[in-house]
Image (cartoon, rainbow, N blue to C red; front, side, top):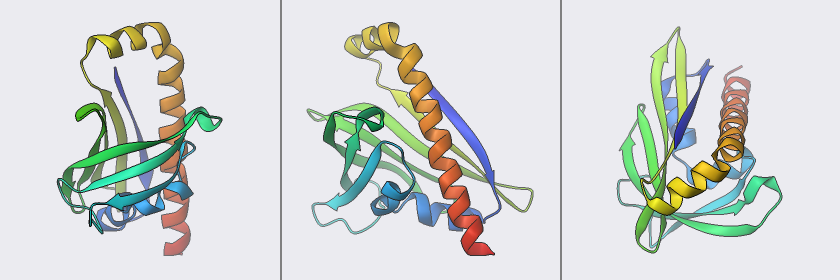
Length: 153
């Protein structure tokens, strides 16, 4: 009930972190989340900051808002958040950034909460949703890479 994708980027860890931690920019990179906004007075990344993402599931629909809470926020190293429903974390997403070969290795990951309904969901649909998530993570990371490497040139 988890997976990750890693892409090497010719950009510094700080450049990568600045982009992935700015949730208001995710719509330019993600195939599913087309916009996001900070909530409750938050204006940027910090542990406990809340935001919501506007999601078009599978790039087709349904369309809905997901409430999120930042759970890890280490500049140049990691940005992570929980997708929350009914006050409980249902899914944790994270970006981990490591210096490598003059740039950065960037890993995007997800981990579903260990609940019975999600275990059943993953058993029935995990093969297809897992593929969708892997493809979406790769698409997101490649778009971020393109942006960072284009602006660095």
